[in-house]
Length: 116
Image (cartoon, rainbow, N blue to C red; front, side):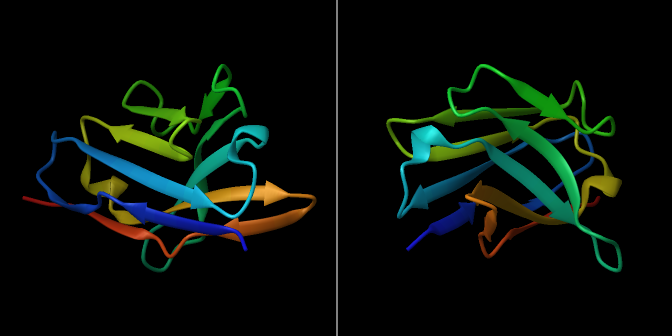
C-alpha cells in the first residue's frame, strides 16, 4: 500500500532554515509528480510546491517563491523541501502528497513552528 512518511520538522527562529523529507513506498515513485502542502491552525490546507516525476519541473506558491526549494531523489524514493528565510507565517503542519489514478495519498504530516 502507498505510504508517505514526513520528517524534519521542528522549532526554528525567524530567518532560519529547515529541510523536510518525505519517504515514499508502495508504488513506483519515479513515475509520479509529488507535492508539499501545509495547513496552519484554523486554516485550509494549501499547496506549497510541486515537482514533476523526473524532477525537472517545479512550481511554488507565491508566498514561498525564492525561499523554498522542492527536490527529489528517485533512487531513494524521497522528496525534499528545503525551507530558508523562514517566517512566523510559515508555521504549519507540512504534508507530502501524491495523486495516483485520481486518488490522493497523504502522509501524517510534520509540524514546523517558526518563533523566537
